[in-house]
Image (cartoon, rainbow over all chains, first blue to last red):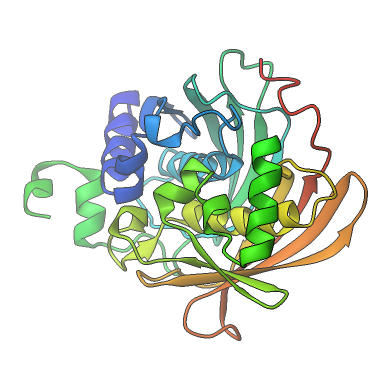
Length: 161
Length: 153
């Protein structure tokens, strides 16, 4: 697949998820097995005085999303893979007034399980805010053809999905 | 911090912890509620179309479930901190057991060990029955309130 095809698949997948639209999560870059997503500064996530850091929970959501999107760039066809487990280590406090980036990579594919790792940062990749690893379960018998799969894969059939 | 101390005191006195929950923007966005039954605090994530991650089932976004559980732990520990300040998450590890369907989700946190600086806890999340959890998590939190702005860059 070309980077554009990966990007299309990932963008359609993000757009299909109401919570990703709510947070405004965007695709920055997609290539084989890797993606970068951005969480823009969101006034709804700014606490107004008491503390000036972004709540860790938002990062967990972002990491889960990016890890799952990275699996789209590692598989031949789109498969809806639920998360089995996710572990995130928080290394420093993110600022709520700057966008947050996450690089995720699906680094191992087996018949049943996908393994991913992700790194969250703001201005400087070498100063990560958080690191995470996750595993995903592949559907039994491989990709299932469905309206949702058609929608994510795009192409001519997408309009009717 | 004084403001937070006052709020924790007021919450302990009235048993209404909602103002504390609403302090966290993401908790407010998700609409997290909490109810106190004696020593037990049960948190609720009301069904909300904005939290859907998988539109086909439909199911709640896995990250939302994780964030909700993390919030549950953070509040449970914050309420028990010796000094005012929000407990800060160090690590969080989550096992998903079932899809979180588009309905109300509940969570409860058990503190396994609370030291002077570090708190260790586990969180259970369920929907219809507590005996059929949708996810379980364990986490460490930093309880030192002071250097909150320390490494903002």
